[in-house]
Image (tube, rainbow, N blue to C red):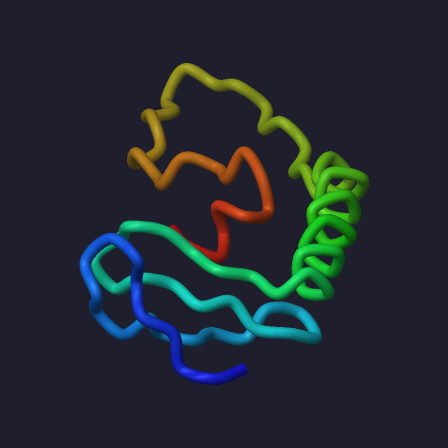
Length: 86
C-alpha cells in the first residue's frame, strides 16, 4: 500500500499490520484507512474474537474474610478492534 496522507490534517498516515493486510492510521487520531480486502479480514477477525471471548475466563476464587480487593486493572476490550488501537 502506498503512503497516504490524512485528509483532515495532511499528516502522513502510519501503516500497521492487520491480520493478513495493513491499516493506515493518522498519528493524530483522526482516523484509519483500510483497503476493501483488509476490511473483510478485519470483520472475520472481529467475529472470531467474539466467538472465543468467553472461553478464556478464569474460575471465580473462593471468598474468604482475609481477602483484599485486587488492584484496578485495564478494562477488558469490548471488541477485537479496541485491541489494535488501545
